[in-house]
Amino acid sequence: MNDIVYALKIFEKFLYKIVFFRVFDVPFLILWALCGYCFCFIRSKAINIRYFINAFSILLGFNLIKSEDVCSKKAVSHYQAFATAIAGSIGLGAIVGSVFAIKMGGPGSLLWIVIFGILSMSTKFFEVTLGFRFRTEDKLGYLGGPFAYIKYAFERIGFIKFGKFSAQFYAVIMTFNVILGILLFQSNQVISATKQINNFFINKEFIISGFYAVLIGIIIFGGLKRISNFVSGLVPVMMLIYLSIVFFTIFYYKENILSSLSLIVNDAFTNSKSGIFGGIIGVVIVAFNRALYTCEAGIGTSSIAHSGTNEKYPAKVGLVAMIEPIFDTCIMCFLSGFVIIVSKAYIIYPDVTGIELAVLAFESSAHYNLFLISTCSILFGLSTIISYSYYLEIAITYLLGRNIKNTYVIRIISIVIIFLSACFADPSVLIGICDIFFILLTIPNFMAIYLLNDIVILELKKYINNAL
Image (tube, rainbow, N blue to C red; front, side, top):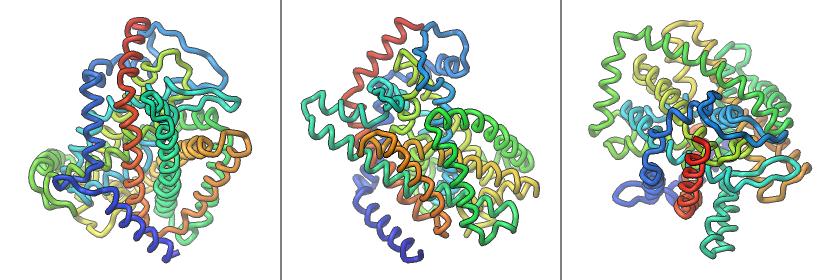
């Protein structure tokens, strides 16, 4: 297994040199994705600010909207789609991501994560609106997401073969990303969190992974309906428990709150050397990577979950999805990182990282927090694994064809991958690979958004004129 980890590290370094080539000392693909964020924000005229209240009213089911849902036994509600998408992004990435951001970019990276989270909301609106607009329906349900609109975007301008290639490229990269960067990494971190609960679980990695593999298998074999029903109940519970622990820990270190906030702001705009990557550019790069990984805006994955919604207007679906970065990035990721800073855990334990550092930070305020935060970490990880198992299923069936046989085979593969996650002792290589594949997905996704932005604006006008 050490040979496999060593090979993955070499693979990561090789990919990093190719993917993150620099322009003006900044990785080109970071600039590419950041420009995409800015384009969506400007093109939509700051829709994340203008329609923020309306978006929340749709999610909560208030009767402020006059549109009628298109009912279908194959579809899910706005809230269920939102919960499925948020389960994929609000998982351990929100906790572990903030730890890695502080370790690599310093405390100031947290402020930039929030800034990018707010900016990303408009991007999420664009990609989810498109994903729903170009969805198709078959015997197994709705099939939507980046694959459909990427293909159409290039067909629209006459590049039919390139459109097909770009959609397949997206599906292939997403497959590798989910397997290496999501299922293996998240499962590995769930195992680590489980071992934190009690010494009984130490050196029983395969028993733990086997248990979780069976549990997740039962859920994902029920398809999107069972997945959305499960996570729609799990997400609010785990968020409530987690935020209670967060605020308790922050209050425990209340004398450090103001100094920690000052440190975050100052570190964000100065040439900080507190992280591995010094300087403001380094801090921004690290923060953007983590924000991208946490909120998934620009990646397009949320559009897969929202494509199964009961709805008539694509823009309305996009508005609901637009709220997601507020929860997973601006609230969960920031607060997780703030606990690390206010408790000074990143200073006290310089050699500890990942979920272990987060657990130590929470445990420092109360010993029983060890059990609670470990339990939350497990729930976060499981929710992400469940959602991304569905994304993996959609990506591979897009490549191989969507039928019952292929669907079941892919679900079994997901279960096997979860079980094998116990083999990895060092998860850092997995999150590095995940970063690389995530940023690669922005290439075809933003190209499609640029080419189809007029359709998104048209759908928004239809919704405004007919439903508001």
